[in-house]
Amino acid sequence: MPDRVSVYNPMGYPPKVTLKGMAPRLEGLDGKTIYIIDPRFDDSGLFMEQLQDVFARRLPNVTTRIVQMSNVYHHDDPKTWEEVQANADAAIIGVGH
Amino acid sequence: MTLESKYGVPTVALHTEVFRTLVRSVTRLRGMPQARYLFVPQPVMGKTAGELTDYIEGTDPVSGRPVWQEIIEGLTLDLPPDEDEIARLKFDRSTPRMVEPATEDELQQLFLDNDWTDKLPIVLPTEERVAAMLAATSHKSDEVLGHMGHQLHELWEYTVEKVAVNAVMAGARPEYFPVILAMAASEVSARGTSSSSMATMALVNGPVRNELNMNAGIGAMGPYNHANATIGRAWGLLSQNGGGGSKPGITYMGSQGNNYGYNNLTFPENEERSPWEPFHVEHGFKPGDSTVSLFSNVWSTAFTFGLPEAHWRDHIYHMLRGMDPSCKPVFVLDPLTARQFIDRAGFDTKAKLIQWVYDTALMPAGEFWDYQIVKNYVYPRATAGEEPFASKLAVPPDELIHMFEPSEIKVIVTGGESNAYWRLMGAVYRKTVSVDAWR
Image (cartoon, rainbow over all chains, first blue to last red; front, side, top):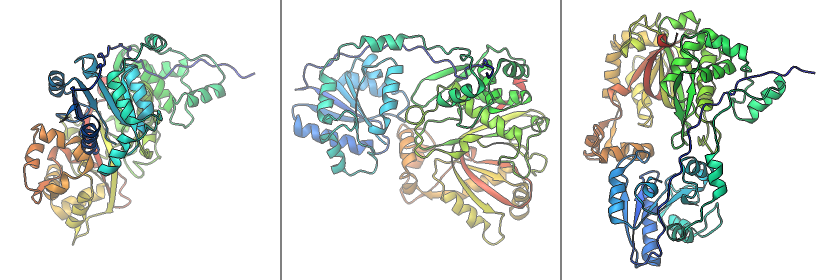
């Protein structure tokens, strides 16, 4: 019968998960302003332009505005977030890759 | 998630399908399991406007539901709290110190199944082996050394003991431990998550190279020396285990992967045969200091033979022009080639070679700004006014601009002079750290 061996676990220590609250959803989109946020990564800009066109066609009573993030996508961007908070009822942020 | 929780703006996020597992993992671990997101087909890049419209008007490849409907619902429909998910997230995730005892074969399989290895057999980190490793440093085993993690994921914490565990697994000897600790303390991860499959490189300088019998001669960058091999391997294992894992699709997204990941290109500089000052001296250390210098974003390797008299300038110019400007030039020269740079070109210091490379590596601005990685990572900084990028953006597209800054161009000498072959690596220098601090 082979001997049993005791060894260390090599994994580091994960951070605690801190639950965050979500914003309430809108009752409807009619008459609302939605900011479409472009992270400027891998042709996301062209995608967001098409999204804006689809909104114009399908929901003409919704105002959309495309904004680009101020810097590289993985940097926090309080300037853009504050603009969105001040002017938008909701936001869509999207892709590249 | 910041828009939702801090700014109170209901938000929907769109991703491409290949990131499905990563997105779910990040939203859960960042504390927002009910973040509203949806997926479109991969890729977005390179698609026409019509194709992208089809994505929006089409089906989410992950959920099977209409993308447009998911966007509207994401902004307008509340989800009831998932109490089970919340309970799972609050569960204590602290890592056990030990693994359940088992036979050696069972433990090798467990480590493999848990993705704790580089898929090669490891040296099992028994208490005796880890204690021997810890004896090679004056630092306490419970000292928190640093944090590593993944670009969009969470940062995990590791102690001196955890580094010792991974160093044993790599097959490193205790006398190598101060170098491995220095690498760990740098917090430069050898397991990047980028879809670009970037690798890392580590250069050792100073007396420690000879203390550990590292190889800077023939085969320096190959599998021919125990210290070179296992120090680099330890860095990799610590990066993946100490940093929360490196699992394809979740915490590793490198589309093709990178074979440099086995020992992370760890080797010493051949200071004794180099005609120039050592790398660490160039970066502010004394010759008698022992250091390790870390490089990330190792993407490319070009190669040639010596400096032919008639066209060496053209050869190097074309090697540089063939690089993506996001890869910074790191000249890895055999000592024979280093001396040719002096004999043929008059570069009797590294600084003169670096200046010549800076002056030579030019390309039209329009071409520079059309590289995709430049568009992703440099263009936003330019539009934010950051120099030197803002000035490079302001010139006409036909104007020649410098591909690199002098500080980004590095020169390393290693090799055994069996011939004057040399490499031009594309890599980004991160930092040089003291090994002596970890003895």
